[in-house]
Length: 361
Image (cartoon, rainbow, N blue to C red):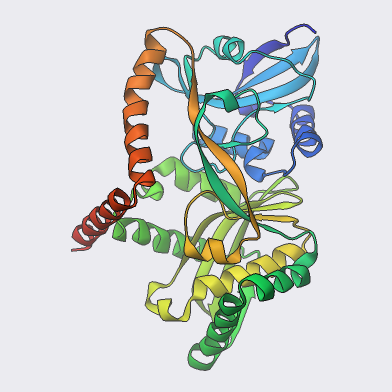
């Protein structure tokens, strides 16, 4: 079969038929229709990042696939929204046969970097250098089925979370949960909590980058079937105590930015919020609740299983690709070394804590 023709466009130039086909292909070919892989997410990134492009693959005049990416200086490419996107790759018809190097040349890229490549992306998987668990909850049997799972596998965790819920009511007042909050003040409170957490723990604050704040604002107002921004808030006596902003498609809820009022940490408001969110997600037709890559004790307690996501880079030959390797791989190798050795990992966490303490002075 002939190699598809490849045209490069800005996401804003995609016509409604492209958006519909893109999302239909995801529904037909992906085991989980993650909203980060929707056409709407790429369009939103395109509105805040002028370097965003989409390679449209065609047979004749008919589109058969889409490859979203960002193109930086000297042909250095990266996944759309790299740094904040939790699912990456191309959207292709199943019978599309394409060489990865041919795609790079057509996009004028000497490298394409990814850190949340989904497992079904066979075009790019040979270039992965590491893989990570992304904890998930299977909600195909509804919330009642999930509660049965918790009682069997995490009974103490469920019991403690319910007890903390009752304790909050006694000490703070009646609880009110809003699954899809539209109050901009609640979103601002969440971002302030989250930014403070990043600074306190010595980590880079993504909200210090204006494009990320603009992206979250854009997605908070998006209500498309394949990509909706969902702000969930737990209130105690009308005081916000925990909040989360994430994305959902018809069947997948993808966690993104959770946080809580740190002065109320002893009540575990984040756990209580998550339990309410999971129940609301199941009631709204979500079949998969994805916590995203990253280690956390609460994720291990809530999850029913894991998906795998991958990290790596596809590179061509030539000086541009070599420069990308020199800029990225030594840092990536150092991160792998720290992750894989508990003593180094603990030392790194202590250093981050010290940096966060110094920032707070």
